[in-house]
Length: 113
Image (cartoon, rainbow, N blue to C red; front, side, top):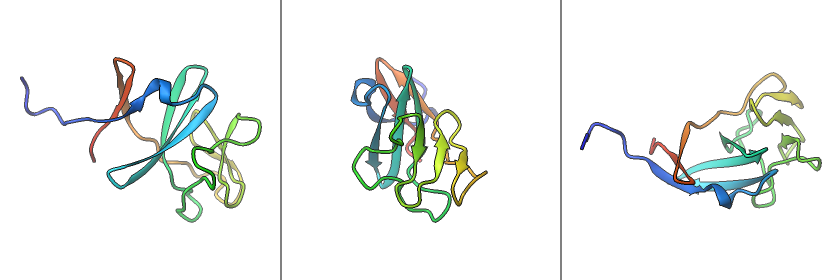
């Protein structure tokens, strides 16, 4: 057994994130959210690049009404799901911070730091 490998934290099951939906997490003090679109998962820090506040006002609601963009509930900024890049709003041109993750046996894992 290699003890030099960093321990990973289980975030959730893939099934916990609805298709074409989103889910927020507070894991060891880190606010994160995931979006699942066409079977692919995207994971970001839950912090708007404009003023650093969480993106959602309603639990697990990170998408606009069409479900095609991530939206900041505070000022309406829109972010591309696949890249996290802001394409409309006061933080236009800036991006959400992605989180590295792995998937193992249907579960999502992140590093502890």
